[in-house]
Picture: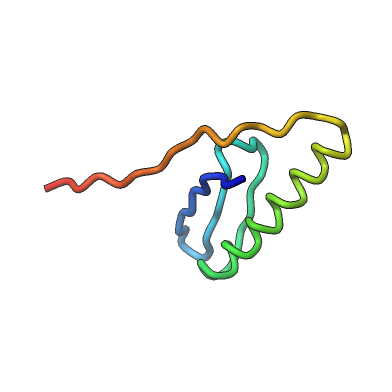
Length: 69
């Protein structure tokens, strides 16, 4: 399953969150680091849900970009 990930650049680091997995977040010094960390966070989040016998949230969030003139 593929989940949409939001990556934001802060003043000293990058943050990532997964809208369809509330509470699933990561922070890294670089974009590459935060992408790796959020992938690990997603895997751990899903493993925990399965361990608790909970259903996996559907990946409903869609992402697009809009050009503004």
